[in-house]
Image 1 (spheres, rainbow over the protein chains, first blue to last red):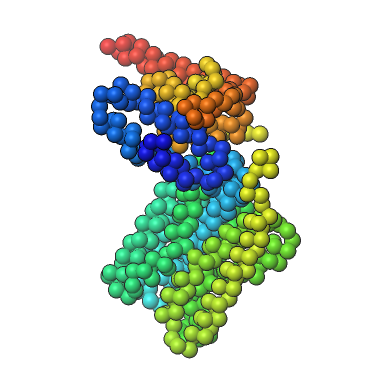
Image 2 (cartoon, rainbow over the protein chains, first blue to last red; image 1 turned 120 degrees about the vertical axis):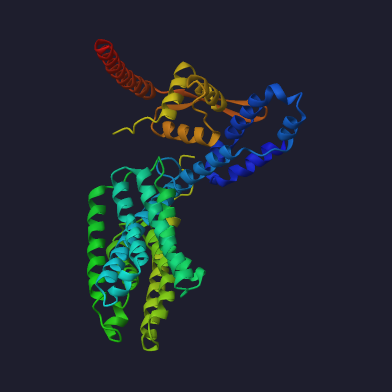
Length: 339
Length: 114
């Protein structure tokens, strides 16, 4: 076996095991036959070509094509064993739930910034409003996804990410209030959402049913708007402030409601036998945890016990959802039953 | 069941398989020839297309051979694949005809004005 073949086989390890069993040998044959065909005229006379055969690497274009195939097969849609398809379904749900979550947070943040007693501060610092508004590109990404416009949806999601990065840079280097790792962790839900959108909604992935998801988005925007309006008017130091004192607390309450609602409304009724909904909710909820740790700095010592209780409730929710998810995943065959 | 529109890559793969069953690299080579070197399929891309076409029932495995100690699998067009390729070719021909007619009318108008 030449080094080129060994390295190509190493590259194919990016593909899931079930796919390698079906395809690896014929892919290796196609790659090596193609390589030899391209270099046949040179291979005897040119020492560098012989050396490339013996010690070379697959080109970047081949590496990229296998990487894309690896994403498609790991987040499978129509091709692949049941567990691979369930994983793909969970990734797409993470993207959709994450987009809803980000939309609600974005609307709450922007509404709060525009209506709070501190709005004169925000109006002087336009970058805050631009970053908040930019993150609302997530709503456009969601709508474009439902209308089968995947390329523009990816662009809109990337725009939201760029806005988030601008916000990160501002927070870290301009206001100098936070360390960079903390700021990155706070934006983890957005990064995970965008990554799930890119990985899950590949060419083979089905388009989600528009109507229920559009209603869900309308509800998320409505909740975000109401939350932002209330937060903007809450007086500091009251118990209400300790419960809903910043827009980010919406994420805590969303996670806790999901943790209470899932077992009763979905889990016990057997509506999620594969555990994909629970898995997706667990990932979205887990991604929201670091932001709540960071938010503790916004409150005085008196509010800390309540914030700690809130964090514990969120973490417990993640555990409950993960258990439901894992139970479901174990029920799904990892391989095709037909062989 | 509604069928997804054929991508250019899928269309070219079906075109190549309409001639005769082929294995992976032969498909890559013939797609390059048919497209006048415009479409160069990488192996990862090829197998993504083959997975999709197999999943849609447009192609199926034909036979397997051992070539230099490695598996070589051939693919062939199914009846559904033949119908899909015929329909897509007719659609593209109609589009090309409409464009040719429009361009001829434009040329005639320009010649009349000159």
